[in-house]
Every structure is written in structure tokens, then in C-alpha cells.
Image (cartoon, rainbow, N blue to C red):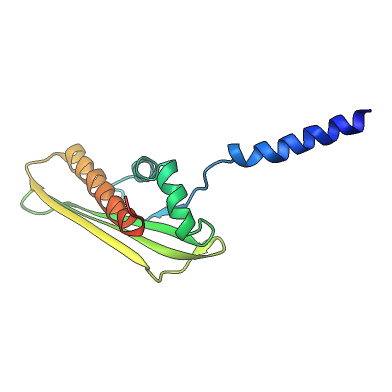
Amino acid sequence: MKLPLLLAATALVTLVSPTFAATPAYLTLDHSSELALDQASAQAAWHAHLDDKLVKRLAKLYPVGKWAFLSQVEGGFNADKLCVITARVVLVPRAGKSVLFTPQKKATAFDAKPNLDQSQCKDLARAKLGEAIAAVTSSLVAQ
């Protein structure tokens, strides 16, 4: 009597589980200068640009277990008090838990602005990282 009920519950869980499966997450590694951008801001930029819909589309062509993203933001102030920022984003293949630096797609965004303070320069760094992420992801899948 309890066996058919148990089998029915197991079948229901099997059918429903893929529907509620979590969206896969890409490995994102950041190698930014702390003066330009901190790790928390870099990860926030990745989460803001890699929404569930985009990740699902990317994962069909570039499986999460086989690909990763690297980012690097460098810059700061020069002698003339000019805020100079360069942001690079690269799609690289994975080898288990590590990555191979053989870039498949890459994008760079840069800018220089005068008369900014440190927080405004960091805001510029976040914006340039967002541009680089958008450039790489838009080249991988049609928007």
C-alpha cells in the first residue's frame, strides 16, 4: 500500500526537479588592482551583467564546466591628476578547477577623465568593466 505512494512521490520529484534547477554559474576570476577596483565591486559587476537568461543562452554554446571568464581592471591617477582606467575581459577554457590562458574572446574598454576624486575614479572603473563584460558576452550570443 505504501509502495505505490512512495513510487508516485519519487516520480513527481524526478519530473519537477529540472524545472526548478538553479541556473549554472560561470567561474569568474578577477585580477584587478585594488587601487582601481576591489573584488566585491568586480563580482557585483559580473552578477549585474550575467543574468539568468543570458547565462542560459551562453551555456548552450559555452558550457559552464568548460569555460570561464577572467577580468582585470588597472589604472589610477597620473602626474596630471588624470584618472586613467583600462578594463579587460577574456573568455578562457577551463581545465577542471583551473583555467588555461588561451583566450577565445576578449574585449577591452578604457577611458581617461580629468578632475575626478578617488571614488569617482572607482565608479569609472566599474563602468568600464561593465562595458567590457557586455562587449564579450554580446559577441558570444545574439542579443
